Structures are given as C-alpha cells and as structure tokens.
Length: 215
Image 1: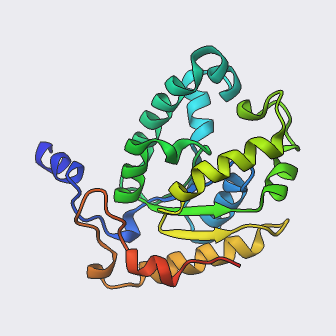
Image 2 (image 1 turned 120 degrees about the vertical axis):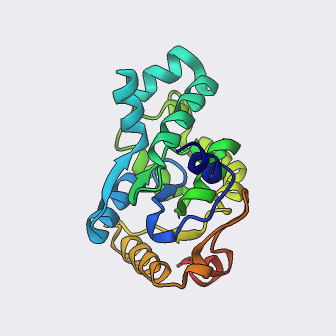
C-alpha cells in the first residue's frame, strides 16, 4: 500500500524483532563467518551482501571495482542493501565500505539492528591474507598500512552502530555468543524501548551502552 510505504520511509517505528541484524566493520572482521553462526543460533536466514551483488552483476567484487570504480560500486551496493533490509528478520553481512555511505547507513540504523564487528589491525591483516586477490583495496598495497588508514577513517562511523563487539578469537565463539545474547535481550524489551520514531536517530540508543561488548 502506498501509505504504508511512505510511513516506513519517513521512519515509522519498526519492532526490533522484525529488524534484520546487519553486521558492519572492516574487511577481515569476520562478518560473514560470525553472521552465519549468529543466524543459525537465532534460527534466521543469512545473507551476504557481497554475494548478492556478485549474483546480480554476474561478476566478482574485484571485477566490479576494476570496471566501474568504487563510487559506482557503492551505489549498486546501496540498492542491493535497500532490497535486503525489508523488515524481514534475517542476518546480513555487509561489505566493509557499505556503512560509509550516508544513505545506506541511515537505512541500516533506522530499519535494522547494526552490529559493529571490530578487531585489531594485526588480526585483520592475518585474516585478509588468507584470500589474496579478493580484496580490491588491498591489491598491490601494504595491507597493514591500508587497514590502519581505513580504521582511522571508518571507526568513528562504525561507532554509530547499535552494538559494538570485539572479535579477536580465532574461532569467533565469543563474538557469536555476545551478539546472540544481546539480540535476545533486545527482543525481550518492551515495545516502547525498541522502536525508533525519528529518521537518522539511533534506535535503542540507551541499550547500546548497556550492550557495548568490548572485550
């Protein structure tokens, strides 16, 4: 219905149990692996936005960067995420730069539950080295220097996410457990505590402090 669509676009409250869980953070933070495990624990579907983009374009992320440049890639990424964030509960892993796009970031914060998955630079370097050639921004570059620069630029933006979880452990078990516990607690909250009525605001802002899971 047109009226319903307009209401949601203007920031109507969306119950937290209907929001997709959206993992954000730098490459190598473990968003796909952790996202898959969180989805299994919560009984939700899992979607990797990079995979969805590759399927839609029938090209790899690296090829898309090379052919069209980062700006056009981010525009396509924004459209894919707008389709995925549809008030259907699921877990979505995003590309490292997705949350940097203001329009995408607003959509995630208003209609999803954003989880910033974070790790030290040395951990990110080690993880990204396992798939050489699959990270366009690291191609023919010093991975440590690039990731450190990205962290300085992006971490203040990632910090707008509702939850902040450190993912240092090799098996990701602690991060998965923290995220699942926090989401279940949020789902149990009263409706007045888990709705957002203002576009651009951080829903559950008070809860974000309680569940800031830095370890």
